[in-house]
Length: 459
Image (cartoon, rainbow, N blue to C red; front, side, top):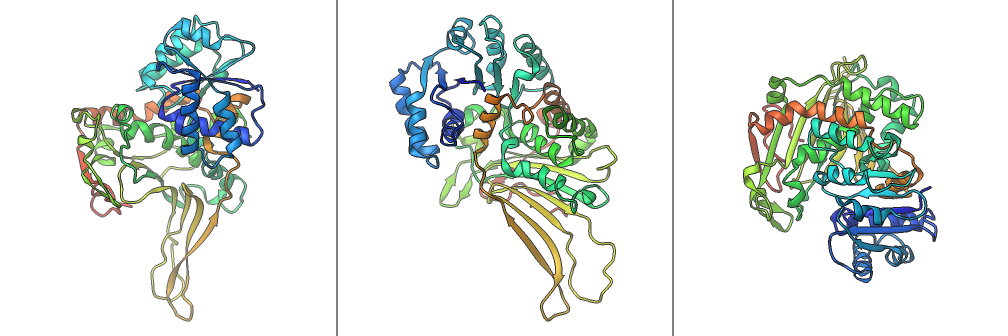
């Protein structure tokens, strides 16, 4: 296990909301020993004491579920260094010391190439690891170039292209439910499943993240990485094991099987939109274009929906719908598996036999199965719902992610060729959207999103 962690982007939202609380959870669970060294770096000219005070406040705010002694230990242990992440001398000073180090680049993706280039001359200790947050590049060409730069610094096994979705218990339960239950896997194909929705709709609006979000949008922020990763777990063939090579090989098989989107496909089967002014609960939300830090000329979408099809034996004929939106009326974060209807109802009851829907709730964590039964004392078909509540995870997603990095378990990180393949899948969508060949629809904040195509349920 690596016992040194350096986080670049120390004062950013990612460190405050997720990394520091994740480290506190690891300390509380006994995974971080007293000799663990944590250094946070940024351009801000703070002292150790100032940063430790800031850290304590962020942990109280975002990590309050962790025991107080674990939060205090993180705040007392962390060291702060003012540094430029693209300066070789600054990097060399930060990583100097005994043994390998894990470098977590909690930075805007545009900074990654400069940081990785600077690391070439920083004398990175053998066995060190580099962690990069999504999105990995801005398109296929930039992802390929970043992979080339990384290969000049560390071997592929030492690169962690992380996606915290894959560390979520419910996302991992997709595999468990499929592969550990004989009742599901025989039905897990296009003969029985008509459509699978992978949805991350949230009531949160921009929430002060214009500096990042306005240059990315919903397609790159959510669909290109998070939702495509969930698609891989939903649609992959059973791996020989959950080891690094077997799992990653099966994931990339899914991405390679995605039918290339023609321009006509993009026009007919994708949607983009951004929110107008509206009301969310008791809050008045301004239009996205009027949010602080937003450049309306970029025409950044806050809602993205893409319909994909896989060209393989298992899934030919099933539709995969990936969707994410901000400032919507309700939070809806789930994988919904829509089974085909039964071919014949052999009895004379009235009512409709609804198709079965198996829902994996991603947040909150639960599972429901919609069935059809017979109403009590009546000759009427009636819907039934079976619900299972997941056990609370022993670690938050970022705690699990950080533990995998420190132990060198790369199974749930994204391999270089997989990162490139994900950009290939959505390249036609990005091209058409950037050229305004798909209309940018609008929807009021607090609504269910843009109007669906005729005959389609917006939810």
